[in-house]
Structure formats: C-alpha cells, structure tokens
Image 1: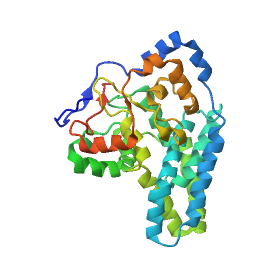
Image 2: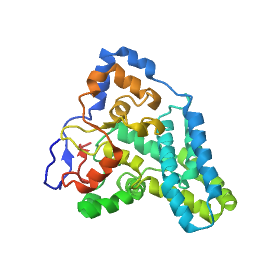
Image 3: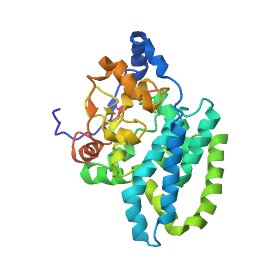
Length: 314
C-alpha cells in the first residue's frame, strides 16, 4: 500500500452509517447458518479464572525491590493484564453466560488484578462504541481534538501511545459523562473490598507490580497494538480492520475485529468460523499482519496520527 508523505491534520468525516449493520444483514441473508454461531462460550469462565489466578500468584512472588516489580510487570504482567482486559471485553458482551448478571459479576472478578475498577463503566461505553461507531457525541473510543493537536509527530505520538490507557480512562469523563449505575457502584465496592486486604498479603511491591502491569498493558505492549489497529485509518475508505496473527490465540480472537463488529453476539472462539462461512465479505478487506508493526507505523508514519479516525455526526 502506498504511503502518503503528508501529515494528517483533520479527522475523516463520513456521511454514511457505520458499515457493520448493513454487512450483518447481507451476511445473514446470504449465510443464514451463521446464526448457529450466536450464543455463549463456556470456556470463557475457566480461561478467565486461569489468567486471574496466574496474575495474583505472580504478585505474591515479586521480590521486595521496585526494579523487580518494574521488570516483571514489563515482561509478564503487562501481557496478562491485557489478556484480562480482553476477557472483560468478551464477558461484557454477555458471552460467558446467558444471564447478564452472571456476566457482570465475572467481569467484576476479572477486574480484581487490574487494581482500578473499570469493568462496568467500560461495558456501557463500549456498547455505545458498537452501536454508535464514529458518533461524534457518543463514541469515546475516538481521541478528542485536543489530543490530536497536542500529540503530533513521532515524539508526541509516542508519548500518547505510552500513556494511552490514561486517555482511555479519563476521556469519557469529559466527552460523555454517565451517571454511575448500580453495577458500577458494585464494581467499585467489590474492588475496594478485594484490593485493600489483598495488598496486606502481597505487600507494596506486589501492588506496584499489579498497578504497573495494568499501565504497561496499554502502552508499548505488542498486544496493545490492537487498540490502534482496530479503527485507525490505514487504508482510506475502510473503517474497521482485522488481524489474523498468533496473538489471537490468547486474546479471545479480538483481532477478528470486522467480524466482531458485524456480529458482537458471536463469541471470539467462533469468529474464525464466521470468517470462513462468509469469506467473500472479509477476504478483500485490508487486514493487519502485525500489531507490533501497527505501533511502529502509528508513531513513524506521517499520514497516520490521532486524526486518523472516522467521525460522523449524531
């Protein structure tokens, strides 16, 4: 794909509706058998519990030294924390259990090693992202204009990328504040009830490990490339991008992102089957081959910036 040498200085704007609803209807008309892929996946529960247990166990093993906490968070914790992010993503689509309340409770438990209670707020904002993709008022996944103006050029984009988790956390508060509901309150209270006594067990360095693991998970971690790969415009005219590489094996196939947006009710484990069943709809779309390369290109390419997102009016 030929790259432009011009710097991106404005968001892309579209007068068209987001592409996934129309493609969903077309696929269902041509391949009604994909409805059999809808539903829950019982393996989400044991897989999530495994990663929770692994992260909490490692936090007990951190030596009483800040350097070790940093090194272990970079080497292991950031990967595990990001897998837990994506477990929560899967669960908040109500794909682990038929009852929404059970999914909410599992997401809250998966939130425990991540220190900051965010799972239930994420669920609300993420559903807005799905149903109002690109909406200038409701899709807080898109950087705001101030971010794009300030964090320009390779150095600016690198600084933003390292701290992108902070922007994802605080951006919704300013752009689309939501009144706390009962599940968010429960998320907060149970997180406090867990993390306070658990800190006494693992000590300050164990807590430092967990906190840094969460922070590093959203930065230069290779899995964090999916944040950029999913909707930043790398090919004009295309709004969502998939990735079919090996990281999908531990990330609930979140790389199958066109497929996921087309059918959010299909568990990640079944998204490859969806792609195979409706291959003519996906094979010609541009797909990323490496999340690490996505991070590199985001920082180094002049034609890719925080402005490289598609917006549409409400």
